[in-house]
Amino acid sequence: MAKVGRFVTDPKAGAYCQITLDSGEKIVVNHDKGGFKGGHLTIEVPKFLGLSSERIFVCDLDSAEGTGALSRLTSGAQGVEATPLGAFVRHVKECSTVAEVRTRCAALMTQ
Image (cartoon, rainbow, N blue to C red; front, side):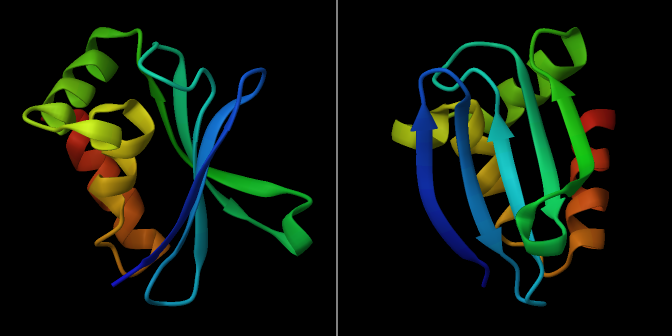
């Protein structure tokens, strides 16, 4: 099972959480607004010493598609899992590889 890091919140930059997948690959789940607000949620793979990253998923939480995906993920959720960041972390933490994260997120957006 993936190792989920702590949730970090910055009032100006939003919130993020780093996850180490079973394969050893790391991903960072970011919510640019934090809390329950809309905005964008992204999943990135950090590169060379964390100085750059490859964005593998973007969700505009203010769009109809993003609102639908978020409502599916937060249905019945409580606490931190009811936030956009917590819901997406819960959604991808069972993935073993970055490829599986991409596939799982793409499937979520097409439902």
